[in-house]
Image (cartoon, rainbow, N blue to C red):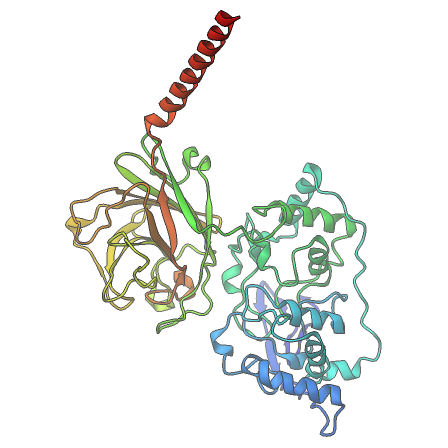
Length: 522
């Protein structure tokens, strides 16, 4: 008979325990029980509290209560629309800290979060809306929601950041091995796009779903993406989430190796948001355009990044879409145009009504008629007066996916074209949390009433949509962009090359003639 030790796991507000497991003659008898304890009541600001706390309370009730709730429990009226949900202040657990694991944050930590916000969440930056004194007054009031602050007399101990190791091939290789050995890939994915096998099942300490960070998009890192910020996240962990502290398993050198590997995943070494370009330019090519998104041809094409946001204009709304950016490349030849679309999605979703899962999809939107003035269709799938055309690719039964040409005079008036008019073709692939899709369609079609007739040299409005089916995104619930512009660069006329040659020849001839006349006179 073997008996394992009693195992007890504790979390704020909950205790779960497993009794000894008895192994008798090869039979396992497992006994377990759970105990649910009420949340520790929040400490209230005194009725005749200090002026500082009373001032912080007024600011909180004006700006913070809708998300974090009157009691600081993270259950304000807006909480159900946000993912991740607002923080419950009562437990004293805060994600972003400069203090060692298990300790409270410093006052400066709380102030920094209020000031800089939490990128990728519903917590905005308050540095422009609230003056610094107001932001500082919020700190002591927020601390009144948890008795941990009142019971802790000693100042929290800060994490000591060791000497940085310069990034290089050797350090990055060591960091990559650590990424595997520490099983970071199980949440963050093999290439860091938050698509690990454990990612769909992750929950926070309040049993709400939570997503791991997409390590390839550092501008969304909570707490910043400077090297020292990453050091703090690895050493102190992120309280209330599945992200643990690695202080006991990573020494200073290993921590920096892992940081250097994470930073090598970024599209730009600075980690800043890609620069916004308002015009998508398509280069003319003479060759056949490859249909496969992985063809080396596409690596040589210029990439344009466009931000995506949740559709919150029309019901049903999507406040927390998965997609927040799409990369687009475009080329054309004398017959057709092609769009190469790339966006991150942690799951390859296929419809499953029993689980509330819909199909992943993406769409390129163009007006049916190229505007001749400043008036354009409404960017959200057109309006009653001006129609749009959508080239929509979705995960289908075939390996390449399904493409549908649609027309819209509004988000509720979107219809597919007849099968005889479907001329767009597409090929898609999914790998390591990323979709890549190529859409190809003729420049000009016979269906002039429903299809845009593309012309080089014209500035044509263009917009993009993306749906993550595993996030409940379908129909109006999606990530959207505003109108940008699409320009097929016109081919250079032959005269562009001929006239300069003629000009040089004429100038040389005149110079020769003048020199000859001067010599004759002398």
